Length: 262
Length: 356
Image (cartoon, rainbow over all chains, first blue to last red):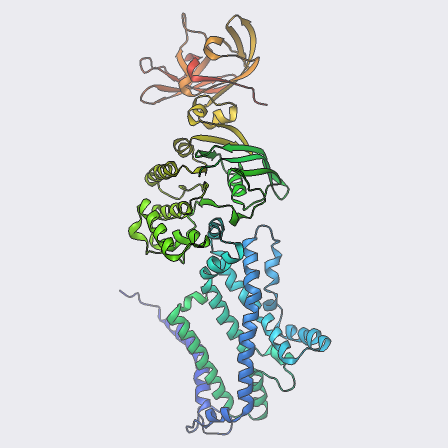
């Protein structure tokens, strides 16, 4: 039996859905437009803007940089974030309550400010290589996801299980890897995906930290648009969308999307 | 291998709060001792100290000849059973049981053999392949028990193991725990807040309050001869009447309540009576009879509500010094509001030291 919806509700819902989805169709349309400038609705049909991406070497190199930064930065964030989340949950009673919030600061501080302060402190003062600074910046940017999402998993983890393992003769560090980690793996994977996507999409922090010869894909898209304003931008966007949808499809098939929002 | 567990003057703190005060406890080899008390009395703290999850501020803990006091928890070789089972959710029942054996470096074949044999003993042989989530509460606790027993520890500890089970299962499980503990002769420490559970399962019970053991004895002794007012109240002595001796005449002692009512007690029946004491009695221990000529002397009371218990009537009895509960015979029902006499039944009463 279906309950009938009020027409106004149906109309509002459809409208909101349309507003959410429309940009994706506009981008898709613009990407195949047979014109040398961005336009919608598309005029004609061509796939040359897609092949154009691969002919511009800057797209290829920045895409590789972005993937490297996202992969390593996320790994670094997890390396710090998992132990941090563990400590915050395990010793919650003994730790001051503000400590957990420190790890959320990178989300609360405007990204522009984060990028600028990193430029000031790390790049200029320490003079570290650009790639390393980018990596550190992104690791800092996505650290909150690692701490929060892994922390959510640990919040429902029963620490008496850990004590059970220790009482059975398993040393504490080994217990973490054989008993704790397998039971929060869903949270770790979720944190990885969220952090990875955040890093791949980041503009504000990267804007300050990219330097001579090294840039990320979103920055390259911006730079390209400022110079050319041709449908290549739209086709890159379509590819990024396909990539994201692909990742989500894998998540949905293996773990279920709802667990990302847990 | 059966060994004794000895706690010697153990003190423990959470931050600046002292949670155990100079606690000494000896559990004999093969004995099952329960720590009984309400939440916050220090019973779980004691267990966690022995397990090695907490460090004592002072004092020592020994298991047989081994000094456990500063030994890391994973080297203590103690079987633990938790209230919430604490099974490894990502391992099958068999792997849960085999976990401790794996830590001891046993080969896969031997682990499997021992784990299956232990599952057989707790009646879960056919559940070896299952994951913990697919088990009922009672089955989970059996797996937890098997997991703790299979490493053949010199000491077993139980932290409220039956609290999450329903009433019927609780009784079955405690019989089961007792059976396995007896069969192995494993020295055991059992923490619970449930008096019936503690009394039914234990060789001896330690009743705890505010970080101290108030009395450690066999359940029969605790139930019939509590040593102080706290234990008396705990085991159901609802009437605690502070009294003061006013005269002694040979074996007969005359004592008065705070409100001035006089009782004459025989030292032959009650044992030695100090100058100040608390007369402790369950409702059964205070006989309610009609006031009047030729009746035994006692505390004069005004009767309140009468309830029918099947074997007797129970009366609320008001006196200027406080309210008491007493029982009267079925043959002589008394009306609320009437006057009556409350007299202690010697074999049902205890003479306790005065409360501070």
